[in-house]
Every structure is written in structure tokens, then in C-alpha cells.
Length: 228
Length: 213
Image (tube, rainbow over all chains, first blue to last red; front, side):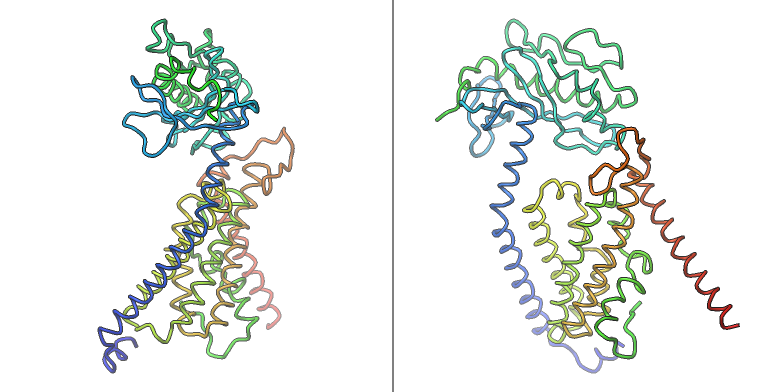
């Protein structure tokens, strides 16, 4: 039927271009309008999500500061574009504005995709005191046990990440070991049946701690209390 | 595929068409990509259904308003631009409402652009009808799609996670039937529902045949 109609009346080129142009212009306005209209709410949601993730691993924190650590150059508050090689980390401050703990993201290859985790670091014990998952696509009921398995989470009550004497590297690399064979405080006892995901967590923490802590620990005094 | 009947249907019939006779999920088997992928929980299914319904109603309204000024040659391009615009708006709205929900639905929000229910409705119904009937028909389809998604989401969440809308139903000793929240579970549950509707339709046919005989 369409061919018959087209044969009878030919639509002028101008009309087609005009229609497409008009529709595109209106649609452009709608898109920009909805972007502008939701921008502040989306930013606020992102901030709340970040605070929630940091507060989970640094429970005493009441406020969060974002910082960059650049290996060899020290640390600076995160503002504008990240310098090359910078590692982002979050500092949790308690109600009095004193350092309550540090949080950073790590990521390791899991079973389905990268497992992105947030871990809390306490300078007084030089240990990791909690983990939370930022994003993962692990098998429900198997890989996601890293969130619920009590024995696994007990690994992160005080996971040792002490630096070596020259503060240049970890004294002992964090390592995930087979279920039931943990003997050192820097080892993570894997979940039986979810070894790949457990290893991803261990590797994520190890890689992030190895990169971040040598740059951060010598500069800790800079972030002991919240900048006014 | 066009379900437009020869006689003018009443408004109520327009609405009910998408819910029962032409249900997108169980009768037309359309939009299978989100149907199988996001229905791991009732909340996901409901939010996906509502998002799709909103895009469907708004795009059918706009397409119907423009049906007399859009030349036939460029109509598909126009529909796609309209649908993509509305999906972008819904995408931002969901980010503003809940980031957790946005992450759970993932790429399937953007994929509403290519959901064949929406382009199908625009082409088969909205482009030939005035705005009000077009939007009522679209609303029926949207509700029908949401019901379809919820039928899968509810069953999969109860069996695969032992909860409904995040509320635990069976207590701590319940061992979840994990495969139900994995991709194969989507096929199992959809297949079971289709089997149920087909069995029901056959039984009804058989009953009518006996009555006529």
C-alpha cells in the first residue's frame, strides 16, 4: 500500500528534512531539560551512595573527605582532574573532625566480572578493618557469600597490611588461602565453594594497598584532622 | 501483526486489549530481552515495567499527535528519535530516584529504546489513531507488560531468594533455589507460565466444543 501512495504523491525533500529537524530540535530540548532538571538530585544520590559505602567500612566516620595519593609526590585533596598515576582514597572523620579511618577501592577479577570492593584501613593497627562491595556480578548464592559469610568477614576484623621498615612496600602481601589453612594475620581464609570470588577480594585489597599505602602512610599527619 | 479491529472498539476494550488478549509477554512474546534478564526480583520487574509503560504511553501520545505531519518516508526515524528521547529522560529520572535501582536494572533501561513493543505500538496503533485512544491502548500494553514481568519476578524471587519485594518469607533455614535467579531460571519460569496459559486455553476450547456438541 505504501508504494501505491508514494507513487501517487511524492513527499517534497524539504518537508522530510523540516520534519526531522523539528523533531530532533524538540527531542534535544527534552533531553537537555531532563539532564539539567535531574542533575543536582543525581549528584546528591552519588554523594549519599559514596558516604554510605565509606561509613560501612569506617563505622565511626560522620564526614568524608576525598583525596588523591600520587606515588612519590604525597597526597592532596581531590579537586578537578586527577593527576597522572593518582590513587583516590577517602578519609572518614568522626564528629569531632578527627581521623576515624581511611577507605579505598580495590578491584580483582572474579568469576563473572571484576569484583569492586571498598575497604576500611586503620592507621593505628596498620590493618584493614572492614570491606564492602561496590559492584559485582558474581553468582547469587555462591559468589555473593563474600557479603554474608561470617567466617569470611572475620578475616577483615584486623587484616594485617603493615608496611616494611622503609615504608616502600607491604611487609607481607595480602594473600587468599584455601579454606581452613589461614595461619597469618595477612592471609584471607577463602570461602569453600567460592574460592575465585574470595581470591578476587584478596587480590583487590593487595593491589590497592600496595599502591596506596606507601604513598599515604608517610603523609598521615596531613589528614589527622579535618581541614576547616 | 496489527490488532486494530474493523469496528471501533470502546475505550475500555482498548485498555484491556494489552492486558489480556494481546498481552505483550504471554501472547505476543515481545520484549523478551528485559523479560528474561531483569526479572530476578519483584522490585526490578515492577520498576522495569513502569519505566517501559511510561515510555510507551508518552511515545504513543507524541507519535499520535504528529501522525498527520510526519511524512511516511521518515516515520521510523522520527519514532526512534522520540522513543530514544523519552528513554533518556526516564534514565535520568531513575538515577535521580535511586542509584541502587539504576545499577540493578543496568543496561536494560537504555535498551528500552529497541523494545519492539514500543516501536510496534507506535507503528501499528499510535500512527493511525488519535492521541487519547493511542495512549489508552499504550497504557493497557504497559500494564500488561508490567504484569508479565511481575509474574516472572515474583516467582523467581520467591523460589530463588526466598523473599518477596525484599521481605524474607521463609526464615533463615530456607535454602534458596539459586538457579531461579540465574539466566536459566528466566526461561524455566517463562516456559511454565506459557504452558499454564496454553493449558488453560485448550481446556476452555475443549469445554466450548463439548457445549456446542
